[in-house]
Length: 375
Length: 248
Ligand code: HEM
Ligand code: SF4
View (cartoon, helix red, strand yellow):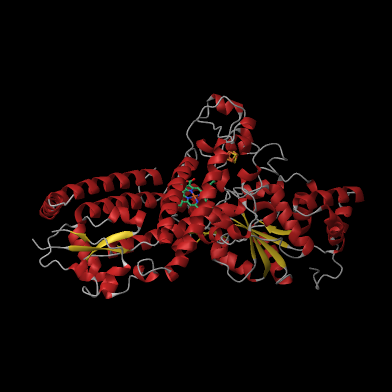
């Protein structure tokens, strides 16, 4: 992905060395990030080579309807080279939250990058875009988020949708979605988009994804929903260390019971691990210290579409909208079965009344036949 | 009183009956294990996780029954092309005039229990009636929903190519949450279907006395002799066992 315009641009490797890291630090970083990209150890050489030969890829990072937890998560990914060097000092040309410049200066920097690297920069989007009320719910520098997004997407080589907001709409898109918050892929149709859902996504996953793109110049392998397979091909449930308790049918019944103390499976107190695709069970959070389930709280499926509208967090039930608060499939089913049973009863009784002539005829004939039996 | 003569007609062929009972068994097992999966009872075993596997077993039974349910369904679809006219897909085809006439008749007489002015034996169904046919179409659709959502959820636990054929369902619907919700909801449709179905089978048997219930065991139903093409020719009755049932 070398940029023609910048023949003399330094490579990533040169930048890293310039920042005072040793070759040894660099190789350690390569080993680390190769693992996080979900690549095999045999790929180490290729990753190192790519970083040694690739010149910097500019990154524009837009913030729309979001809480900045994605950025927060990202800058906490546990290797300093990732956040500090690769993005902050080298590649990140525009991000409202982290850049030193502000106001017109910041916008000018973005404009410059968009012009100079037209068709080459990577656009990262954090947050959803409100389409309601002409997009007035989220404006930056006097322009609507939709406007800004369309402009910066036009010259982008590829787009990364960070977090559940940009990927799925997240909580601001929750029913009834007052601002008509919309995920990126529903607005931009003509660019490759990678979705990295989660509220927020795991910092190391974000690092792995962006490094894959800047080192190899292409997306990692994606699943049917456009998520990187390396991190989203397994359910939290499939890598959960409490899984043996699930299979054994040993469940926490309430958060203060004996079973909770023993660390049993959290399925019945609402764990959404069985429906949630993410790498929390393996990569974990805060430098691998823990993750929700390890801390005794069920997964609530933050990286899944509509997770806030899928029933209560602390119950394992199948919720539905439009049937009243807290109504589950089972309540509706039971009521329907009850009504039906009643209807059947009414039908049976009315049938016995209205068809009584027919039935008594049958009985009379049958009796007569019985009496005329020969033997 | 008008005399009615009944002939025994072979309606449900053996493969249809086998399908029916395997389906009953599979659906029952699937619904029961499925509802256990969705809300496992608090069985307080004084055992370590390493010694117990009951929930895993329940899921195993669900998945095994799911395969049986699925293959059974495939065989039934095959039989709808080679079986007799009561098994044929044509018997379910809802776009004929005859079908809708019969539909209205059944709704009037059997659902709203109205009197018929001029009873016509042509209105009496030999295979399933049109309302039943529609309900089986609905059941078929909901079975497909169950197969598609079920195998989509299952695909990630399996390496076999067959479940993998259904992986596209999850991205189409948006995620496992909604897939599972639909799967759970459809279970209730099966339960409601069974309630109606079993009741109506008993109702018809009670009202008409033509072997509605036993037909799914032996395959025979009793049909008014007047409906057979040629009442005098022996060939017709010779093909059938010589057990013409009579009522005075
Ligand atoms: C008559 C047909 C079926 C019925 C009534 C049925 C019922 C259910 C129910 C009620 C659940 C629990 C859903 C929840 O957690 O809320 C379930 C789960 C499930 N069913 Fe079915 N099911 C049927 C067919 C199938 C088929 C054909 C498959 C295909 C493999 C299948 C695979 C699954 C899977 C994978 C789960 C999730 C289990 C887990 O994650 O532990 N089901 N089913
Ligand atoms: S705690 Fe959650 S993710 Fe872990 S085994 Fe139980 S249900 Fe699955």
